[in-house]
Image 1 (cartoon, one colour):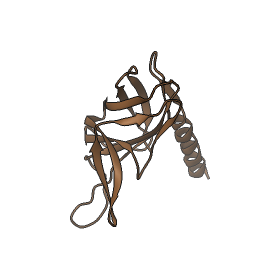
Image 2: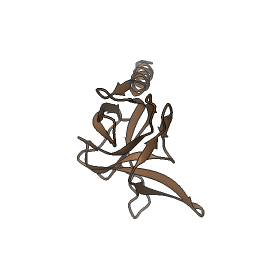
Image 3: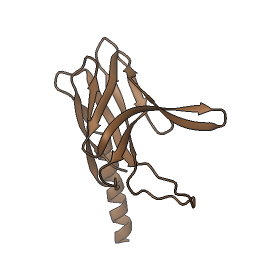
Image 4: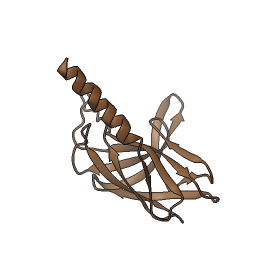
Length: 153
């Protein structure tokens, strides 16, 4: 029973932490529902594991301004580099590919989610374990940089 209570409490904390809003100083961009995970790697035997490698960050970016804003990159304390990615279908195969920018429409929301647009953490400096938090800074073409602490799920 105690283990069940701990699991429920941990899930509640993760959900609450992921629903926080971050906004950069003097920025029209708000970050909502941010979370990260380590990307599973597939070794030759076909078993999933998650040591080293890459990770992904998902979130919603709300633009409260009157002009379209463009996400052009970022950085993280958890990875050597950060890339913007989209997931596309090529025939029967889903593939990820880097993009140079992601637009956040004026008065609108850019939704980054699994199977869609996301922030890729390249060459992780450490494993991302559920319950951890990582720091991510987002860079825009006009808006001030936005920094956010992102929970790992």
